[in-house]
Length: 194
Image (cartoon, rainbow, N blue to C red; front, side, top):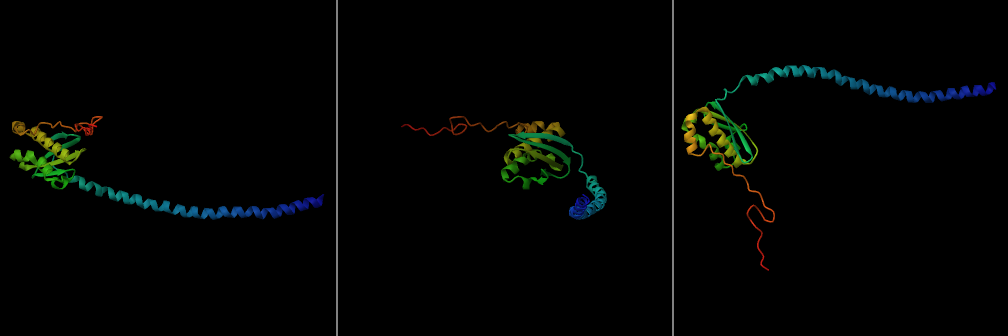
């Protein structure tokens, strides 16, 4: 019996080196983990860079525009224009762009500037407009109504003059819906006699 036990010990001794080889593989995996820790140390200087950038962001906020003198809202179809009047030269900016660059046709440009042509006293005003929704023509109509309403809120004496040129009247026209059994709102299909 003693011989059998010695054989078992020798086989156990031979099996032991086989189990050591897989243990060496995790040791190799720990080396990349050490390299992964290095970028964490690099992140600390990035936080310092953010602290340096925050004072730069505050500098442009100090140069502010003059306070608005009047505010008006104009609507046309699905467009909504919010208008602010400020003291300055005649400058009409729509969504941060000059109105000549924003509106693509002469008709829409002229439509937006009609209140300034009617009221010559508004030559010392800057106009900032935010427009949302609709197309260019409906946006121009919304800007026109918004400017007229802002001029009235600034000076009530301008109401009869603007009303005379129908600049304070809301254009309530919408696109008429298509009807079933027809080609369009009013258009019918071609009649076939036979």
